[in-house]
Image (cartoon, rainbow, N blue to C red; front, side, top):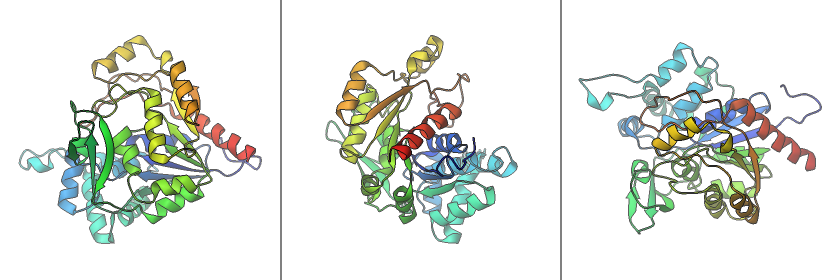
Amino acid sequence: MNQSAEFPRLRIVSLGGGGGSAQTLLAARPFFAERTAIIAVTDSGRSTGTARMIAGIPAPGDLRNVLATLAAEPNGPLARLMQYRLRSQALPLLDGMALGNLLLGGLAQMEGDLAAAVAAARQVLGCPEQILPVSTANTNLCAELDDGRLVVEEAAVRALGKPPIRRLFLDPPATAYPLALAAIAEADLVVIGPGSFYTSLMATLCFEGIVEALRSTPATVVFVVNTTTQPGQTDGMSIADHVARLVEALGSGVLDVALINDAGALHPATVARYAAAGLHPLNPTEADVMAIRALGVEPLIRDLAESDPGPRELWQKADTIRHDPQTLGLALWKIALDRARAG
């Protein structure tokens, strides 16, 4: 579906990590004229963490994934090279390194910062979307746990077997990238998620200026709720718990809509496979709906999951149930259009 004279030219901003934001903007392509990704930069995993150490930059991994996924030719040699992981028995530090991480590190040193590196890579790859780091600051995501302990760096924040996360913070504190703040201010729809709840979504809110921008934007703010819990981050949390933590971070009256997958439509074998890996499908209950409405947020429940593709091998990450791009895009377009017409 193309934008036409009877519909407004809508601007969408996706806030989060490399997988969820890429899927959101792929879904948005037929419906939104301007599309911007604002991407987390605090990952400290093996490949990304090594690239950070080598080049002295914020985390490039999520940005690399968005660039490759949204490339004009995502199956072409350049996009595939961005995602290719080196195999090196001689240099274990580089074994498993995504070449795109090193490329962004080199571009950042050559161009001056990570934002300029992403802009250059976007031009080479022909990405039609604007892709921005949430910040150009090289900082670490930290957390205070429910038992009072502090954990440092993203890998520790998402580690398994620890108490629940009480709050997140950055060390050192850091400000958001100005162009990211401008994109939020000019958007018609801001989408938070799907993605790793604490280490991608909530992490972006830790940068000075992001929450304030979300509070002041005229855009409709939508939370695309994850389809499952995530080991080490949201174990035991309900859908309403996710929304409540987000509202707590944003303040009341900021989040407009929670877009929720109807997990009741999932095949029992699919549910069992994910549960065996510690990922439990989030199925909305009447109690969730009532609690979300009490927070001043509109819950919208739709069958949003893609057809089960079977097990996928991901690099040091747990697989999850992804949103179907066409269904998600339609749902977001309808939310934006309804709000634009009401305004």
